[in-house]
Length: 222
Image 1 (cartoon, helix red, strand yellow):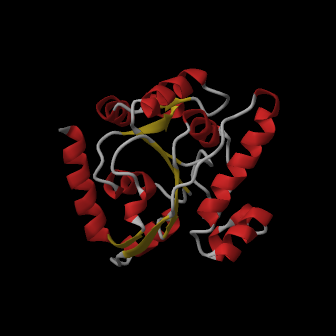
Image 2 (cartoon, rainbow, N blue to C red):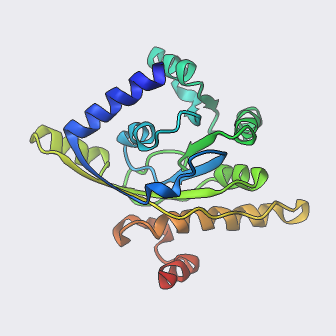
């Protein structure tokens, strides 16, 4: 019930303040586990995650630093989200999400771990790659533009609607991790995830991945 109410409220708010163009919605699996990865450029991104799909079996990470907030504690409890300590490898949180993925839920995650202050792609952490490779589930990349915090504030002050684009790419898979090459694989898989996201973004959003050879390959193939 809480999720239904949250989704209705979120959709209403987004409809009022923004024009949203979504491309590739069919790439999000209708059922079964998946790891949905996206760039993170503004606070509005979290709301879009709730609005994006009609699925109700998704799981979210929420940073441990918000535990002191009554609002976030309420949010985590009623959405059954998972607290995550971003300062190190939070094995407890990883195991909790791994179990949910194996049960067929969908993880929504920003591999960068936090909002980009510049609006461009920043170095990603290996958590998303680790979970996707361990579970053997499809990875669905999403590129988001138009939700930068400064842009949201500026447009709303002038009573102008935002123009948001959500570009959803085709699912891809990561091979299982091997014990002796795990670190190298995770580094390569993390780059793969970010380049797949970068392919869905305009050049000015690609940040440190703009000149990555793998991104060049992906762009050449489109």
